[in-house]
Image (tube, rainbow, N blue to C red):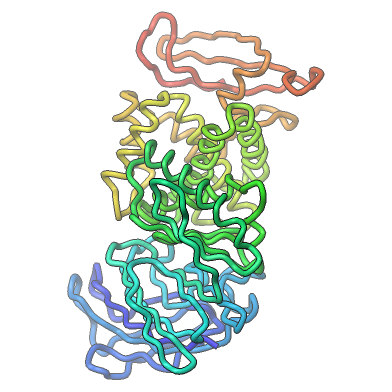
Length: 466
């Protein structure tokens, strides 16, 4: 049973007489009151909770409401995602992930917030959340932890259970691991690997947003991993020997892409999960080499084609999170967009773009248009054609039902025949190749590839597409 009381401080952008929240439908509201303690009318229907004010709130004037609610979180019933358990409260351990909407959420994934949380659990449990923690307050049979996170982000994830707490011994990283009994042996390898990944990301993206990082084990009944500010949770199945460093790298990258900088709208979601997917691939490239990187990108490329006609990346808000369609468009095609952009503007400009994104939009949001401007500034070229082709349309770089999407670095490892067709402003390269690195020549695949420079034009011209 979860019993909660939440005080919500809001600053309306426009005059409003009510606020709409999302709340897990298994949690039932008992009361809603204003700052003076006066009862407010509310209506709860499924995931939606609407709270009406006694008088309209003027724009830019702070207001406070307090909502009290309770309910049982034991199954996937009532979850915002059908058949996926995102919150659980039980004697063997509990987890409350932000996507579960276990507290009233306004503007899911977009509206950033600070938080102070007091969590009371059985006396043997340890609580893990985002921010700084006060000394536990102990009473007979129970203990209360208080966490405060002052920056505006998404500090809405809480884990609790009988954990074995092991500070990492890795040099140069402040990491604490929270593991379940029987998994203590993974503390050393996962702590060391996390430290290496964070070092690589800090070099490429900028400093780690949070000084301390908690790496915690999550029950297998939910997602494979989830990240909140200063907290990375991996399902038990994610702890293995050797280290599942691709999963670990993906979740660690969210410390930058989501926690520090988040999409401005649901349609900009590839700047979160797409960039996290490609960040993990780049870590594979750093740790395991080009062949392993090519293998990862091949998997991403195939996934990007699976549901390519469902929606363009720029309409990700039409898709449902945690579905195969969302993963294909946002995670995988999104990663391919970053892969191609890296090739188009070059490594130096690509990483300058990511560093500028982390610095200029720290603890805030970024839109696709704003990201495009950063890439154009770093790459010293106009990129409207690129984002129109790959973000705003359903196009994926293949030209036949049998073909598949190939990254530019991958293509260099394949046998290729080039047909150059020059125009006055751009050049088009037609690749026709047979895959031969892994075995006998197979069917010819075709991919239309942009090039930036023609022999007669030393600058970088926009691509034309065949």
